[in-house]
Structures are given as structure tokens and as C-alpha cells.
Amino acid sequence: MDINEILQLMIKKGISDIHFKAGVSPLVRINGKLIATAFEGFTPKHIEEIAYKLMNPLHRQIFEREKELDFSHTISGVSRFRVNVYRQKGSIALTLRVIPLEMKKFEDLNLPMETLIKLCQEQRGLILITGVTGAGKTTTMNTMIDYINKNRACNIITVEDPIEFYHQDEKATISQREVGEDTNSFSSALRYILRQDPDVIVLGEMRDFETIRQGILAAETGHLVFSTIHTLDAVQTLDRIVSLYPSANATEARIQLANVLRGIVAQRLIPGIDGESVVPATEILIGTSLIKKLILDAQNKDLYKVMEQGEFYGMKTFDQAIYQLYMGKKISLENALEYATNPDNVMLKMRGISKGEN
Image 1 (cartoon, rainbow, N blue to C red):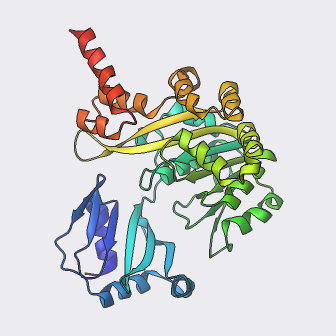
Image 2 (spheres, rainbow, N blue to C red):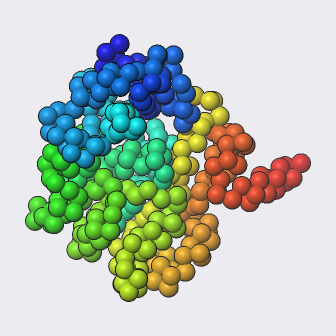
Image 3 (tube, helix red, strand yellow):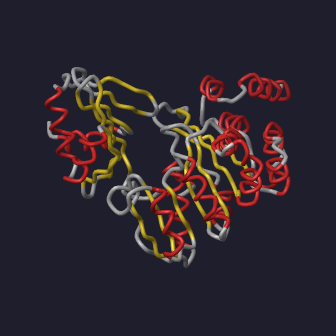
């Protein structure tokens, strides 16, 4: 079967990811679960042919030098795919993830629309979308960028590796730059980006200290900066950023972060109660004056309590979000407890409600 036929089958079957590795049948991920397919195991030669067919000449040069590569692949009118090619046990392997061609709205994705719209209306500062791999960070960030594009006359510049969602100019003008194709690196693009007159800067991912440092500096100079970062929750995100600075600069890092942070949106995708979908649980931290003080004082352990009590500002913890999903009959009790930060506290709250109803 041709690779494009396999990818079109992914779309029809609701598959989010597919993994090719020599000698074993391809694995697919459906609703967060990894499942073996009925295809026969692919030979190393066949997988190499698939990988090189997906890559353009520049991709091939980079892959042969680096032995791993991220890029995107489009089937016109069907979907886009994020592709990662790498080597294992001396042969090529690859993973592809589906990226829909059409942007969905906040309500379609079961995201907290009111709070995210308020964050989109910020004129300057730093907004981070966090979560583990596969938590939907890029989708949420691009949905926010799509909202700004439709509602604000501004100049948006993105730096991505690779570009996943394509945006067309609407009320805003948007330039999307891909690492490897349009710029050599995130840090290289950031050195020149302020001369391109941006209002909104989008960094596909904050992977290293230099990108984080320059992203914060861009926010300090009056721009609205969006990015994703691989962390478990909102508080760990703050810890991660500060820990990347030299210890002698930790206080300076907290001051900078406290001054520019507008919000952190952390996500976990949980299997839906219907068994055929996933639902995002969303933890939100908003950069209020109290949050700013706690960051400055390095009192990160107190941030959870402030988020729990910050409903007025749109804040909530993962456990509160998961509890709401369970009470709304969107997820099962088993999955609620599995994905909770503190399952015992969630169970106690559920039992309290049950007693109150009896």
C-alpha cells in the first residue's frame, strides 16, 4: 500500500499517530491508546523508501547529517502530518501525527473559551501552553493564534519546527517561518525578529535556555509572546524555566518571569466516557498580582492554593478541571483518578458530593 493511502486511512479511522519500525507491524494511536495493526512487518528497505519519499532534498541532507529530523507532509485536501524520522538499531524508523487542515474553535475542542479569549486579548507579555507530548499543546496554541488572526489587526510572526497549522491572513497579517527552511534555528530567528515589527511572536516550542531567554526578552520589550513547553503542570513550568538560568541569576529570572507572565495553560488529554474521543483537562494560572508576588518570593508551593481559589480570574488546577469533567459525565471515574494530580483529594471531593446528595 502506498504511504499516502495509509495516511488517508489514518484520517478515516480517527488515528492520531502511526509508528513505523523495521520488522514489526506499524503501531497506531487511537484516543490515546497504542494499538498494533494487521499490516505485515515492514522491512528496513521499505521503511527507508517511505521516509525518503516524504522528505525533500534539503530534508534528506539534514537527516543524513543529524540522523533525525522533524518536518511536515501535506496530502492536498486531506490533512497535514508532522513527521519525525530517526534511526534505531541501524535502520530508519518514523512517526507521523495527523494535523487537521481546518482550525477548530475553542468550544469545538472543549477548551475554556472565556479565559483563553481574555489571554488572546493581552497586548504584551508571555503566554505558555504546556503539557506532555501528545497533550494537544500545539492545537490549543494555534487555536489562540487563529482567534487573534480573526479579531485583531496586528503583525504575527511565528517560528516553528516544523510548521504544523497553516494560517491565512485575515484581520491580522501572519508570517510563518520554519526552522531549516526559512531560518537556521529558533535563537537565530529571535535575534532578528524584533526588526520585523511584530506585535505577536509565536515560538513553536521553548526547548533550551537561549530560546527561553530571548522569548522573555521579547515579552519585556512590549510584545505578546506565545510558546509551548514540555512540562507536567503550571507550577513545574515555572520551576523548569528558573532552573535553566545559572544559579547566580535565579532571582533575576524570577523578576523577569513575574513581570512578563500573563498566563500558563497546561493540558492533559483524557479518554472520553464514550470510548471514542479524548477530552482536555485544562489547568490555568493567570499572572495576577498575587501570583507575581509568589513568583518573586519563590513560593511556588503556594501557587496551587491560589489557583484553586482563583476562579474569578479563570484559574483552576488539574484536579478541579478533572472533577468538573467527571461531574459533567464527560470522563469515567477510573480515568478521572488515573489522570488526577492528587487522586485521593479528587475521590474525597466526589464522596463528599455523593453524601450530600443522599
